[in-house]
Amino acid sequence: MAVVQDTLDLSGTHVSSVLSPGDPAADAILHLLAHMAFSDGVLHDGELGFLASILPGRTPDALRRWVREVGSEPPLLEEVAEAIQDSDMRWTCLRFTARMAWKDGELQDEERQFLETLADTLGLPRFAVDRVLREMEPGSERFTTDRIIQVMKSVKWNAVKIASGPIASADLAAVAPPGDPCVCRIGLDKVEVMGIYQTGLSSRFLEGPCFLAWSEIVSYARGLGLGSAVRLVTEGGVAYNLVDSRLTGLCMVLDLLLGGDERPKGEAPKVELVIGE
Image (cartoon, rainbow, N blue to C red):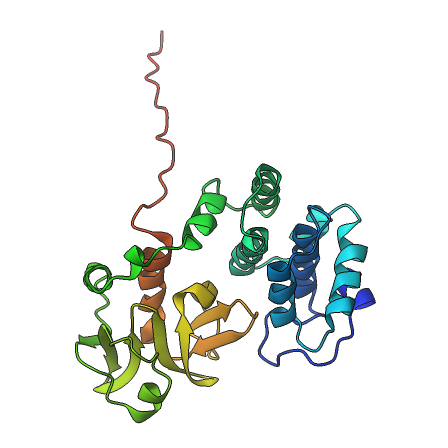
């Protein structure tokens, strides 16, 4: 998909970004973000800021021109689906598009319908849109100390050790959110590797120690190959990778913390008893 390449300067992108122009899947997602931002004919400040965080180095005027050029044409949903073959990236596509839909402060019926059509075109399950919208719901009640502890116990993450108390590692303490006590600490082989807080998590990523707020995390998935066991993607499109395979249990934790306790239920199969003559 060349629409992004034709209208944006390719310099100045994040090295670790999953939305760098030139990659077919990234181009497809950027194409959808431009369409969603221009769906009402106005590029709002929140939408412009979202695009600026994903595509640093572009002037506001350049971004407005690009959104207007791309958004004024019909969305190429079939081409988007063809460009994004990876299942996790398809979820990332839907999640980023849904985030853009909410950046103007409300979700219109037409935007909800577009998300439903997109999910269907990408081959995602029927509950996909409900799921990603629920992940974005504001409200600190999902991240209380009691609920975090309840979730940590329920996932039975046996590969790690879970402990209470403040973070002891200097590098993790340096990136801890001020004024937010650590709810629990995660350890591997007697080494502290992660802290869980009401506002987010801190860990040693392949990219270095970092704190990620819950609201910043757009997508997460188990990585493929030796380079990543878990990959977290932020609103800026930057990927943070955990490399120890024993940390894949974090995906189960995030399923519950971000997605809620309700699990989607499929329809019960219809069984008919047929008696031969």
